Image (cartoon, rainbow, N blue to C red; front, side, top):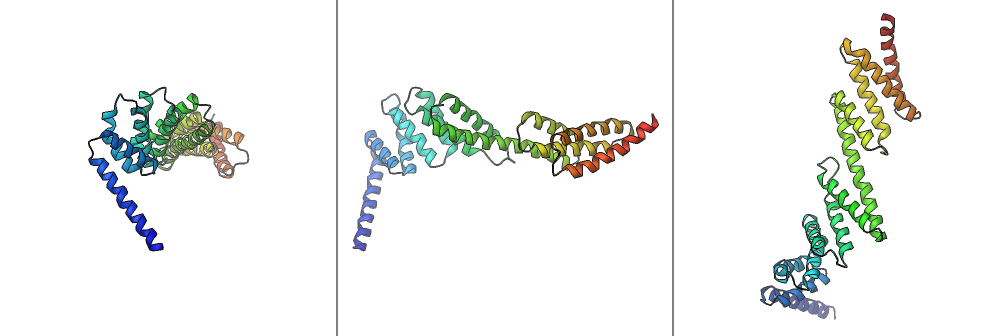
Length: 267
């Protein structure tokens, strides 16, 4: 019995492959269309895409074109070919602005760009594009509650990537002793991401950069920079009085006060 089942499955597979090959070679676009839809519905997206790409030009302007374009874009999406699926969903949206599939196409287009977003340490061009596409979907289709909820979660994740990228750049300037650039970058970071979870550490490292810049400065610039560093410390302490970084920051602030005493004595 078991062997019979195996034989039947083998025969069905051979027959199916034979039908598919015949459809590929057929000059009847209707045969190709039906086979492409069949393979799509079976979840054999690569085979469906192969046929769809062959016949899309021949269906342009015909009633079947809308379904064909959507299925092809979705086949690519299911194959995780996100660069191409995003492009094809956008073509579908512009070609069929009144389609019943418009909301789904818009969501999957945005999600395609989301899937292309790299780790925070790499260039974030795709991340920015994904954020734009996701926000457009949220604004246009608020009634799609489940998809909007997913889109909002993706927006949070992508926003954090941009935060982390900006934070690490500013932090790196501190590590390589480019303290001016570190201070400027943290100023921008705090302004651009006011609600960031990285704010506490950002304020501390900004103060640390200002402290190191001041203590390593030439005499003519030292007093002014020490006073600036002290302001950064005060801003940090006021916001995070219980911070894990406060003990280290306080030691540096006390050193600033000692160095400033010499200027008050001179005056």
